[in-house]
Length: 515
Image (cartoon, rainbow, N blue to C red):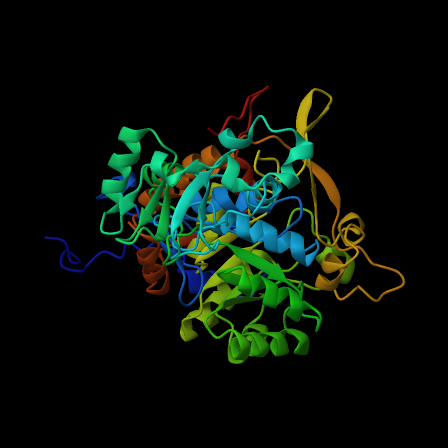
């Protein structure tokens, strides 16, 4: 018999998350590693559903950064289809930003209850205007050009393909539209499944839904039903439109931008500031909450509890965390202000979660492992810039340098970005719009072609995080957060040598292909 036979073994390795930061060190994601847990489930069953704000939940914790070389409508659509959300940048005119939001909101719907509609007196030129602004055709024509009016026909590009340009403004749609007698329509008591069967059999692209009096009540698009099938994780609002966010500044004139975005049905606004703890941002939050009480507000950026408290008290629905940790950001170097990202995320998340405020880790993300570490430290979502730059959906053209396919990528604090727009939206992020001499807090560079976001986000990142959480032993992000707070998730600091050992080493040459 052994003397300590009945004494339970202490098998706890490493540190709790709280112990990791008890010395108040400035730690980055590379400074620690998460220890493995117990696996009793398959990685396919791991749920990545997470809260973006108080009232918005998304199925993947991915957010694209509001940068002019990252997030416009094409990126936002791809992010939403894959369960995340895109934030349209504001380094542009109000009209341009609003049109980008509308492209996203009108991209995919079930029953479209507020479709674009024309009257018989509209011209072919109006069709081309709609196509350029919203990216689609196939528009119903009613007696008065409004919903709940008698349906007369439908006009598509097939109806106007052979018209010369000089005829556009003189040809009314009533002369070229497909009349209602030649259309396939359905009554307003059918389901989406019924609509899919009708469209499949008829091989039509649009299905107008009418009431017993022949009035148009909604519209269904074949492409929308296909997207519902192909993207089951898609982020949608209550009307089944894709979720979309937009960035604004904190100046008085940004209230005009805010009003226009609210009218475009934007789901969330991001107050875009490198240092969010200011009277300007607090006043803007209060203005938004008084004027648009249902509009969600992501405030920031913050890296301390004190900053977080002021914005939460003002009414913020989520916080964006990070200052100077992005790959193209030089704020910490130039301004000597900021915080190591892992420490910032843990510190702010610990405080914010006491008030049920979600946290978005913004910056310092360069691989799947960094995303998982940010989530383990308490982040609800991660905002990505450089990781998404270089994809097909990011703005800009590809070019070749030394045989490598590249895209431009720049920080919003770079001189290029601050001088790009007459409205100086990027400069206002750093309170530099009135400065005679602008001090750059970012750089311009280039990133390698990463292919499509659909494969990168929807395939590689999503699956990688699922497999990582399986190794940790957590079947959901909710459980990951719970076990982190309870001290069940164990971590360990890494020396410089440990970091070298954890990467590729001792090879003459190698090719690193991630997916």
